[in-house]
Image (tube, rainbow over all chains, first blue to last red; front, side, top):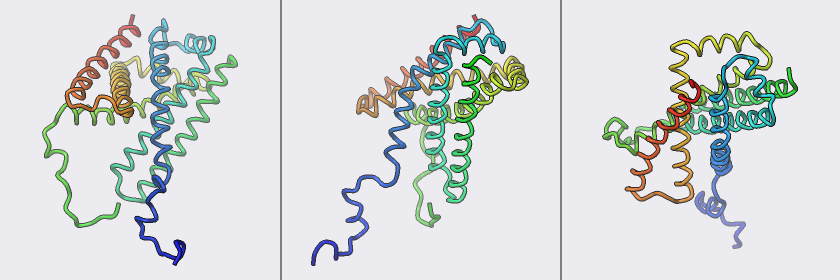
Length: 130
Length: 126
């Protein structure tokens, strides 16, 4: 009897295949976005804190200077992805009703997609000097 | 998870709060609170670029007492989540797992978070 003809137990089938599903990329992307967010987050917070006032024109001018629009976009996208990944884990840990868990994760996906589009469009508009 | 009648482990309130467990749950709570801030950041950027009335409404709200309190809580949450996140990254590469180190880094993170938050707030107000 060769190997193909044997019916493997669930354990035998799983051994050597690594983790199931997308666990590793989720874990890795969470760490990667975290590492990026250290300099980007500090840059964002200290840049805003250093502004003389928070009027529309002052902030628009700040976004238009140098590469600020690029950093702002990178920060926001990293923050949104990082938030989404963290919320995923919280939902998986505490929501034990399957349909509710899936529904919330679908809503989070939609919210993330909408936010990315909105933010990209907004920052592009600001960078082109609206 | 399927519901079952199997015995459960003791619930959280059975355990005495410790610096380790308190900082751990704080990381999650500040993360959740910062996710709310991220949603407001999206709205703020949208207002800044394309909808000035939204920007003005947000500015007015965050200038109020409640708004300032919320802003400060987000700065504090940001500072803590950042410092404790760095602590987590060290754990991820396998460093700092000895219990005395865990306690020391925990208190260090708390102190650093308050200093960082104070620095940001002071700079914004100056």
